[in-house]
Length: 241
Image (tube, rainbow, N blue to C red):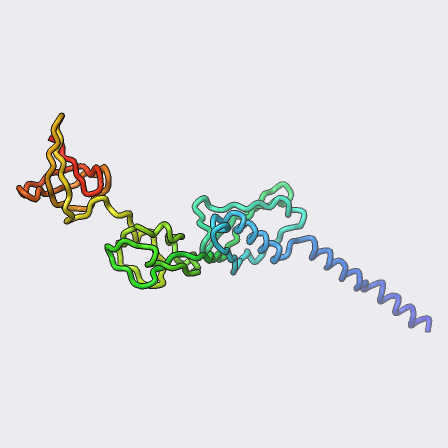
């Protein structure tokens, strides 16, 4: 019986398994787990996102280096940096810097950022050259991270001229619309010829589109002569002589 008790006692002294389990727990707590690092990335993306006040931002598919290990003592030294050109849509890369003793280490973490916003879309097709009115549009919730350079609000579309045919229920890109010119090609315009104390007004035909203060070619409707004039008002071109 004494021999049996001695054997049990010896085994407990040689293999102190409860202590080993406690060591593992303390070791696990000595470093940040991957979830905590992912949450740091997610928080930094949302904090820096220019979309957070205008849309719903969703961060997913976060990828960390496989061998990344950051001690809890280094947590306060963690700093996030993004490219100054980062638009925080789609693939978004963050440089994570942290201290290891007196050494600063940097790793790169990336994830997919989706941005959901209610943006204007055409109710039905809008043909090229048409001027957009409010009745032509409706709002639709779309992941704009897959549609860069879309127009974000309806007011920005109203009164604009369509450059390319717009399909129904599709986002409107900034390149799809333009500010209507003050003078349209083929439009009848007034030609004002000015000298010191004389103004002669005649009708002409604009040979191309133009905006205020822009010079365009105009053909005199009566004589057929072509002149170059400056647009000074809607459908009015000034020619100096």
